[in-house]
Image 1 (tube, rainbow, N blue to C red):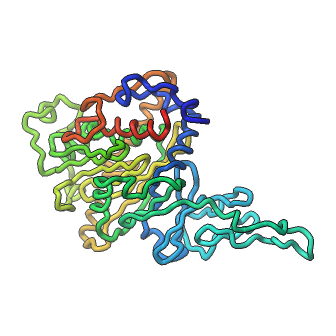
Image 2 (cartoon, rainbow, N blue to C red):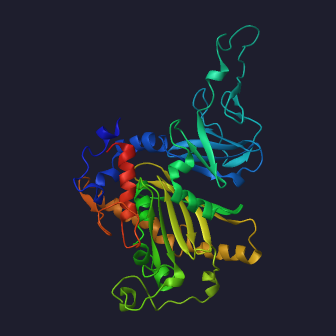
Image 3 (cartoon, helix red, strand yellow):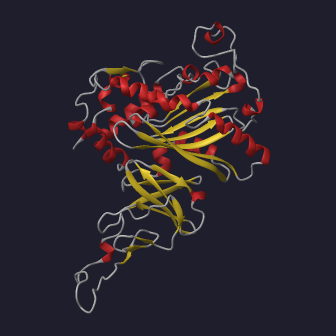
Length: 413
């Protein structure tokens, strides 16, 4: 069903400074998102190149609600295809990762190459002249559904679209530069996990792009002066509004005369201290002085720098009111043993029980449970104005408005 018929037929007159609650609760709009966003003219992150180091190594993942296989199909070649046999639609590969010479469906043993080409069909010629496929059956017409693949700084992206712009053009110069900043050195994957969030996926992406909630909702950040709005920082948005970077520099914090000091905000608790200060020990990671940077790539990818805690997050929709957030923590191959220990200690900040990000796992549900019976009501997005543009402050919802500007363009709303 077209998005125009399934979603809000008319967006509020105020534009992206208002968002109707219905976008978080409409099942038909959710179905249209799968087609227009996740299987549309958009690049989707599917994995690190180092996760599939040898020819034949693979990992299974998701693009929206579509299961996908990423495989290293040649020394410098990656292939991605839908994890679904072309014969009767069975799941082709169940393991999260592994090594294969080819992919064979357990149901009827159709076999596929590492590029996703159908190479063999069990009993294609029948037995003793009986049965089998018709004489004009052409295996080349029944390959797996292949995706376009491009690699940027060791990150592998895939797209269902034949018309989407090349990856760096799609990201734009500013966003590409930040990816290259974060992945300028060979990456070492430190671990991964996921958490289920009981809210619409877009509520989490709004949270990622909402830079000013961090020092209000996350008391740990402000109590231990990791990230305050009094630090030098800002928001960088691409032209579409869909991609953003929120950044700050911890060394520039000056709290004198601010609301943090006055006690006006639920943003600090001076009664708490750390018994073991090594939990927050860090070192200057990048020469630009940025200590906290969150990059959101439309529609559902996040590149994270919280001091020396580095991670990629990918959000997978699991229905209108549920999604699954996949975290992959990383460092660099040339990290010293002490730097590696520091990254692992700082990993306590993030994840389902993270000292910082724990609240992000529930706050979306606070919204979801409250809006269900009021689909025609609206959110208000006017912090920092009503425009979609880069700003020299993080006290703004400009990047949230940018998400909705890009969303509306792709969805035709």
